[in-house]
Image: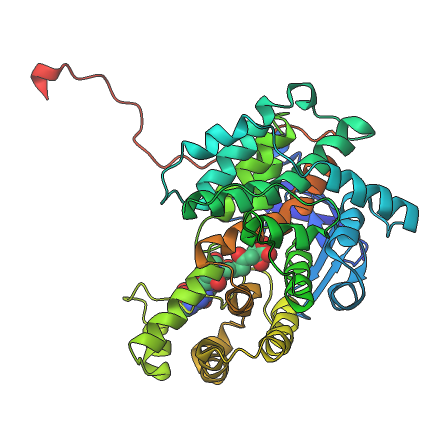
Amino acid sequence: MSGKATLEYDGKKIELDAAIGSENEVGLDITKLRANTGMITLDPGYGNTGSCTSDITFIDGEKGILRYRGYAIEELAEKSSFMETAYLILYGHLPSQKELNDFDSGVAAEAGLHYSMKSHFDGFPDNAPPMAILSSMLNTLACYNTELLTTATEGDGFDIPASKIISKVRTIAAWAYRTSRGRPYMPPCPNLSYSGNFLHMMFSQPFDLHEIVPEVEKAIDLFLLLHADHEQNCSTSTVRMVGSSRANLFSSVAAGVGALWGPLHGGANAAVIEMLENIHTNGIKLSDYVDAAKDKNSDTKLMGFGHRVYKSFDPRAKILKEHVDRVLKALEIDDPLLDIAKQLEEVARHDEYFIERNLYPNVDFYSGILLRAIGIPVNMFTVLFAIGRMPGWIANWREMLSHNQRICRPRQVYTGENLRPYVPIGNR
Ligand code: SDX
């Protein structure tokens, strides 16, 4: 495949180099376009624009392929753990037993929060959205780690803040939940797994430790693993954008939380449950709901359906759908929302509108039912998405800086007023 393309406009011709990836994706390199032609490209929403080259995650949306550092998501989901996968995404290889033990204990050692951070939690109103608490407390962490506010990408300067944030994001999330319930903060328990410790900090009470059910611990771990990275999605691109100004890791991931919060992105898992509950509670006919989702004049969407990249099944949705069945059986839960979700999927999958637009269930369609089954409140769903995505955000921040990438500063095509003279207020 030739590594060149020719662009011709208004009598001018320019040759563009083609960057060809390890999976034969082709990206036309336009880094010299404006300097050589005065022109730029235009791509609102960046559906056709590659922001970087990356070694971390590969997605083939047509084939429903997702790989972290070359490993298939299906294999990692079956054989790996969130901690091992986080190490893989951060450092590029599956860890040896010693590397994993060291990483695990480094993360475990960082689970606590400085005691005075408690007063920040106490300052939030009971109805404070947990995503708002998460974003602000990640930035607050920077106040307690001023010596780590660097852009180091190697050694302790990177390893320590990375482990701190991966560990403490979980504690902040659990304490955000307890703030909203008016419950005392539960300190981490070092001899529990990453996911077990999260459940403990969420649900244990003083003198009444929460029983960590293995199926629930595994479900949380799988949920986090499946969300650990997803190439240049909205929130990861935000982390890269903020980090490109050489902002520190704490403020970069705090910005990622803000982007993830939106219902078109990480907020969709909660929106799916609200949609299914609405259908269930109000006895809405599934075909009527699907018709509303197709109607451009309605602001109804089939939440959990569609994806910018996947034009076939999101492999994570497939894995979650199978796992939800197993967890509900193990916990002897019969959730009517799961039946509604499956029937809704069936109706949509046979509907021309969805078929011709390649709209399939995405990661959010079944994930909310899994979280609901294990007792996570809906307003914490996107928080768990953020906990899972943290290794991916950190790895992308590091990769962008290790490539010494210039500050992100897109151009625009101006469509406003041409030059006009100022009019004194008396003459307007
Ligand atoms: C995540 O990018 C990532 O990798 C994200 C993520 C990750 O791991 O980081 O995978 C996580 O965010 C998953 C997506 C969660 N969001 C939702 O489930 C919300 C519902 N989905 C849609 O809002 C939408 O599908 C998006 C936002 C996911 C994708 O939007 P795009 O790529 O901009 O697609 P589009 O809006 O241009 O849709 C193309 C067509 C349009 O119809 P036409 O104008 O062509 O007639 O499909 C329609 C859309 O109206 N469409 C939908 C629909 N999704 C797209 N119609 C009804 N219901 C939907 N859900």
